[in-house]
Amino acid sequence: MSFKMCSCGKQWNSRDTFLADPTIKLVGYQVDFEDLKEGFFLFNHLPGVCRTTLSVSAGHFFDLYEGPVFQERLFSTQSCPGHCLRREDLNPCLSKCECAFVRQVLHSVSRWPKQALSD
Image 1 (cartoon, rainbow, N blue to C red):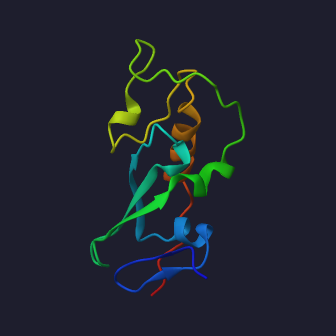
Image 2: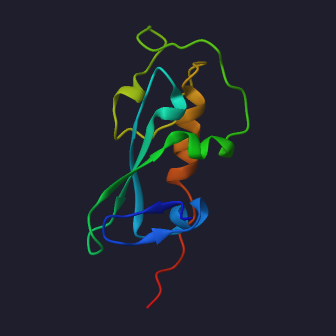
């Protein structure tokens, strides 16, 4: 069974091979405030390949985080910088918010080492 398959037919057998693929680029996060695992990390299969946007459940990446997970959600308070509302915003959040750990995971995924393109 594969981790993800693109509409162009390309498939990745594991999360690590998906993230290391130089033709995959993290472009956003679609939050689900009801259940953070149900949000989506959005990736583009780069131009020259097929230009498809792929969504992967955020929960597939949560094991990449080691640290505190805060209980209080600060969304729509003065302490919230609003990162989760901007789909293309991949910056970490420094607030002590329930959603902040997802922002840290996003940051880690955005900096994932890519394999060299093969000829």
